[in-house]
Length: 97
Image: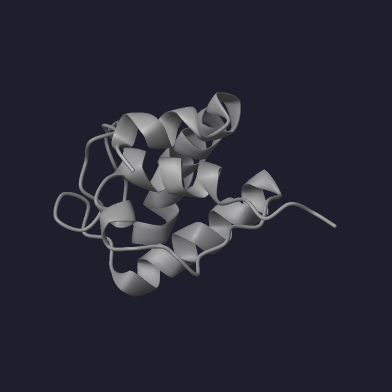
């Protein structure tokens, strides 16, 4: 799925909330201050996120946004940038029963 298609398949309001949440939570997960985080910032190369940090970030996002995310199908490509992670999270929320 192209990046544009991923964005149309997700709720734009939820995606914005996810982006805001990532911006607020990344400094806590990385345990350091960060300047404004561009959406195209690479989570691993630019920001230094680790795989353990990725799990922590997704768990923190779930808690802060009161959502549950299906992480079964997440790929390395979904973790390539802040925007791609926001697309994935907004598009893979598990509906509440």
